[in-house]
Length: 325
Picture 1 (cartoon, rainbow, N blue to C red):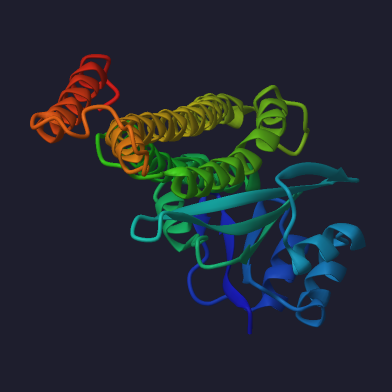
Picture 2: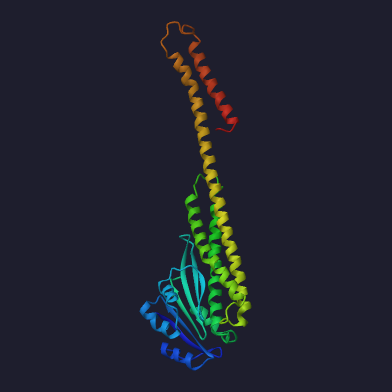
C-alpha cells in the first residue's frame, strides 16, 4: 500500500496505536475536534479513490496529485485547499539538483499529503510537530505550515551547493589556465532556472496564507506563515542572483575565449612575419640571374645571412615590445 502514515489528532495529541484508513474516516465524522493526517507515497488512481470519495476531493486536483509533475501552486476547490510544493536536494558530485513533489489537500478536519520522488520525506516533520501540542491544536494548518517550512528550509543547502560551484566556475573563467567553462556554466544555469521554477510561483500563495486569505487556516498560524514567506523571499532573491551571476560568468567566459583567440592570432601573425623576412631574402638570391648583386663579392654570402639575422631579431624585438609574443 502507498499509505506511509495515518494518524488522528485530538486536543493536539496523536491517538495511540495504528489507525486504519476507515477508522480515521470515522474519527473525523464522529468528533469535530479531531483531525486526521494521511500520508501517501505515489498512489495510483485506484488506491486514492477511497480518500477522494471520503473527503470529496475535486477530480482535477486528484488527477494532479496522482500524476504529479505540476508547477508550485495553491488552488481552492470549495472548502479544500490544494497546494503543490517542489522539494530539492543537491548532489555535489554530479552538480545537479534532484527535485521531488509534495501535493497537499487541506480541509476542515483533514490534511492529505501525497509524496512523489526521493527528495521528499515527511516522517521527520510529523515527529517534530507531534512534540508541539500547542501547534497541533491549531489543526491541519499547523501541519501545512510545518511541511512548507521544511521544504523551504531544505532549499538552503541546495543554494549553498550552487553558490560554491558558481564561485569555482568564476575562478575557472579568470584563471590563467586555458580552459573553457561554458558547458559547466550552462549546466549550473539550468539548475538555477529549475530552482527559480520551484520558488518563484510559491511566493504569492505563501503571501496569501500569511495574510489570512483562507478561513480553513487558523489565525494563530498566520505569523508562522509570514516567517516562512520571508524565508522564501530571501531564497528566491538568492536564486535570481545566481542566475544573474551565471549570465555574467558566461559572458565573461565568452570574452575570455575571444581574447585568447586574438592572442593566438597575434602570436601566429608575429611568427609568420618573422619567417617571411628570410623567405624574401632567400627567394631573391635563389633566382638565377646572371648579373645578381654581390654575386662575385666575397662578403655577399655573409652579408645576406647577416641581413636575414638582423631582420629576424629586429622583428622579434618589436613584436616582443608590443606584446604580440
